[in-house]
Structures are given as C-alpha cells and as structure tokens.
Image (cartoon, rainbow over all chains, first blue to last red):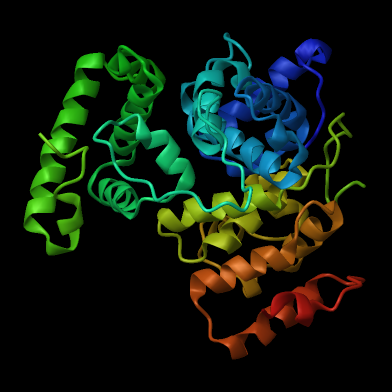
Length: 228
Length: 139
C-alpha cells in the first residue's frame, strides 16, 4: 500500500465525481471498481491509517511496512463493507468511515492506554484472571489465555457477525473505561444503546447455557465473563 | 507501467501492491461459499486494472459477458482462468501470483503432486518471469 503522507489538500476537482462513480459501482457489488478506487486513492486511506496509528501511540508500526499495509487493506475493506450507505453529498468515504476505520485499526494494534508488549527475553509470570474485564485488552494482545480464545471462537460461531462485533466491542470499550459502552458501541454499529445492551446480555446468557451443556466448553464455566 | 488493456489515465497514486487486498477479498468470497474464491478475486482484480465494466471488458478481450461473470463469481478454477487475466495482473506488477496460487491451493487442499499443475499454469501465464517458480511455489 502507498506510504504517501499527504492529506486531502490535493484533491483534484474531478476526484469527487470519480469517487462517487466508483462508490456507486461498489455499492452495486462491482468489486472491480473497488480495485480501481484503491488504485487511485490509496494514499488518502494510508494517510488516515498512519494518523490513527500515531494517535494510538504505536509509532513502532510505521516502520513495519507489512503491518501498515495490512492495516490500510483493512481500512479499505471497511469502506467496501459500508459502500452502500455512503452518500455522494457527504464527506469522502475515508472521512465518512473514519470511526469504523479507527475501530478496525484499534482492534488490530491496540490502544494508547494499552501497555505495549516488549519482548525483552524475560519470561513473564503466567496471566491469571482477576475477575475484572480490564484484563481483556491486554490478554487479547498477548493471546495468552486459551479460555478467552475459546470464548471468542464460540461467540463467533454462535452469533451473527454484527452481534459478535458488538459484543467484543462492548467488552473492549468497558476495558477502556468507557462509562457508557452501549452508547459508544451503538454509534459505531448504528445500533440503539438499548439494543446493544440486549445483545450483550443475551449473549452472556446464551454463552452460559452453551458452557453448561457442551462438555467441550467446560473450561468456560468459571470464566469471569460468564460469572454471575 | 500501463496495464494491458488499461483505458484509464495515469493518475497520481504510486503503484502499491494489491496482493493482500486480493487475498482478503478471496477470503471473503470463500465465506460467501464461492466455488473458486481466489480465482474470483483474481478475475475481479484483472478487470479492476482495466477500469472497465463487465460488458466492455468482455468485448475488449473477445469473451462473452457470461464467461466474465462466471470467472468473477468463482465458477472458474484458478488454472482455467483466461489468459488475459494473468496478462493483466502480470503487466500491472502489483500482484504476487505465487501468493495467490498458494492461497488457492490452500483453499482447495490440493495434494502436493498437484502443485506442478499450478506452477505450470503460472509459468505459462507470465512470460518473462525471471524466477524459479517451482522453488517459490512448493513449500
């Protein structure tokens, strides 16, 4: 992906109509137009992603071309997923979708409030649950807790993609200290806060039942997220 | 470099690598249960290089729209994609066909001996490719 760092100041007069034409085609399911859009406007999205990465305190990623390229690709896929909802009268797609892009980048690289993992060769003490979901982000980054991995896999297998994302984002926002995660998640996924809470609580209830009924999920029975 | 069949003007973006985008698209197609998801992504990418709609793309390369649609919806296997698809991707220099072939093989879970067919196809598609294709493709 492009490593250009300029913002949108050099938009050409015909850029907007070009973007509108391509976004309309993408919204109609023409993925070839998606490749055209990426080819012609990659630097805009690359710039935004770089800004998010810097904002999240992860300048180290800027030096990793492969990882940065992956993030930019993710950002483009966010735009593709939402192409049908974009309006040519509004902001350019990468500005319009910047919250969702930021969310995707955050999922991938962490957050500035999250301690970075430094491999200094010293073996760390095994992670142990504290009963507090503040451990979630750190644990996800470490991928060190098989029960969390199992929980996420089970969630993904048993819920729609939207609900899965809502649940995980809710947990993540909680762990960030968000006083009202249902509102934040609701804005991100265009779901009413009440519905977010409902999705979240139904998920916990269903996961408890799954853990109780399925011997393969036995290890989840004492997991903090499912505890009453 | 201008891609074979390209009708677009040269815009101001640098030539970024689009292999990863193609791979991700293929993963999505796989979830959508396309029969040949990598081939579909490759076919879509090839038309994307030209900037043409399906009808004009078909006309330009002497294909029927049905053929183009079939390739883009995963009904055509990777090794059966028409020659212009490989030509376009190769000429654009923005795709690593070996990576894409690897993913296609992984999706299809081909036995090892089938690698040769994929490598032969890749070599056949990309004249002038100055690498040891077999060494790249077999891991």
